[in-house]
Length: 297
Image 1: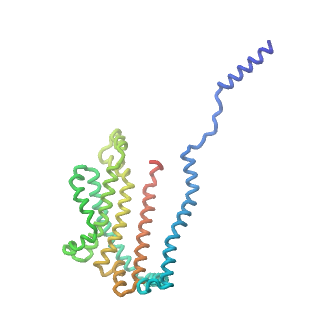
Image 2: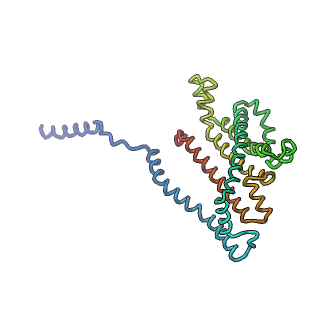
Image 3: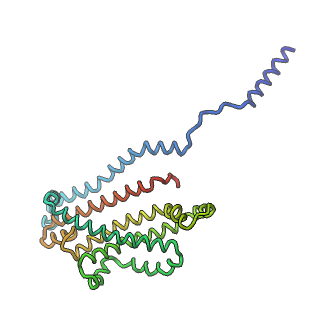
């Protein structure tokens, strides 16, 4: 009997062990968290590689420019060597002349951009929120946006002259178009599920706009602001090239008239640097402004 009891007990024990609850294993981190950690570790290396890969092409262009000056492929009167351009650039900075022109140009571009930003947000918001208004206004606005800034120059010269008002209006036109279009598209592309949830909670129209529509459309609206400021800066240079007695565009024209191509290239270098800094500043502010958004949303 004892011999028979032992197998029975063993069988019962094994069944009890099989049916007994097992100890939970250590909680595993979710796959998204693991991926985020891996991405965070790889981010510095990825950024470093991207930064390194950004240099070969401009360095190659600079080397080709230097070789052109050394071997005389292009006369120095037409294409000064890089050393001469950088020297003039430093002299303009040290004398304060370049800063004076940049200060005047920046004041113009921000004044015109402010006008275009306000009008673009109002017009784009109205077209995005009201289909009826959009149906009436958008075709005319589309035709208006197809005309380049320089195409409005002769008409505006007859209306407002060649003073600062002309520059403000042309810069405002350049900034208005991308701001209005991105604002309209951003509001139209707000997910319907967000609007439906807000209606379930009984949001008023004002709460719907402030807590659902505008936060969801922040990214495209800010892209419009970014492109608008970039277009405003480009329009400023064009306007100052044609109708101005001061500013960075005038400095380019002044150097061309005196056939000082080193001054022209130094001013062009300043235009590129300022435009690059503006774009990077807006990109950084966009990341800060949208820091509340979670990945995948």
